[in-house]
Image 1 (cartoon, rainbow, N blue to C red):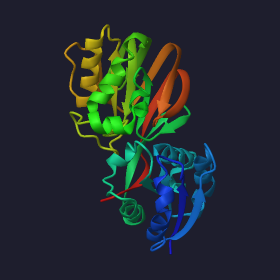
Image 2 (image 1 turned 60 degrees about the vertical axis):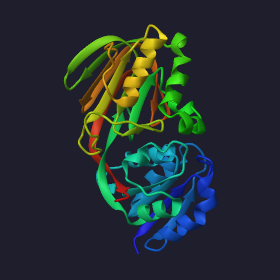
Image 3 (image 1 turned 45 degrees about the vertical axis):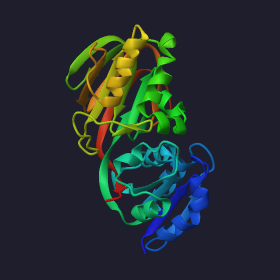
Length: 297
C-alpha cells in the first residue's frame, strides 16, 4: 500500500473534525498505509510536512485554510520533485480554498475524496520569502470577512460584509503605492489590495468576469482607492462582491503573473487569512503548477 501522512488540527473551526475523526481515518486507511500527526501549535504542520515529505506518497491535512497554508508552505521549501500530492479535508470556519476543489459535503465524503480524488497541479504564490495558496492582501478590508460571524454571513450574506465595512469608513487609511506588473505600472493612494487565485475570499464566493484557473500562472489583482464617504465605500464593497466595475472608478482590477508593490512605510499583509508581516516592498510571483492538490472530481 502507498503511504499517506495525515496532519490534522482538531482545534480548527468548531471542533468538527474531533467528533468525526474515526470516520475520516476509516476512509483513509481503506486504500493507504496511514501515519497520523496531530498539530502541536503554530508552525508545526509546516515543519512536519517539510521534514517527512520524502517518506510519503501523499499528505492529507485537515483543519482550516491555515493548516493547508502551513503544509504547502512546508513543501515549498523542498525541490519540486520531492513534494508529494496534497489532499485537503476542510474543517475550519471559512474554508475558502476548498471552494475551488469541487469537494463533496460531509466529513466522510471529503475524506473519501482526499484518499481517492483527482490530483491536479495548482499555482502557488511567492511573497518575498514566504508563500501563499490563494490570497495575499493588505489594507482596510483584510480582516472584515474573517471577523464577521458566520451566522451573520449566513443570514445577511453580502449585506453583512457591507455593514461591517461601512462601520470603518472613518478609520480607513490610504497608502501611497507604486505597483509594477506585467501590463505596466501605476502609482497612487490605495486603501486595499488583493492578489488572489481563488473564487472565494472570506467565505464569500464571487463571480469574476473571467473564470479563475488555478494552474494558468496568472493572479487576479484588485486595488482600491480611498473612499471619501459611506456611499463610495458601499459602491466599492458592492463592486468587490459582485466582481463588477464601480461607477466612481475607485476599483482597479487586472490579471498578471507577477507584481512588485512598494510603499514609503511598512504595510501589514495577510497571507491566506493569516498575518503575513509588515513589508514596505512586496515581490509577488506566481509559481505555476508548483504543488499537486487533490480535487473532489
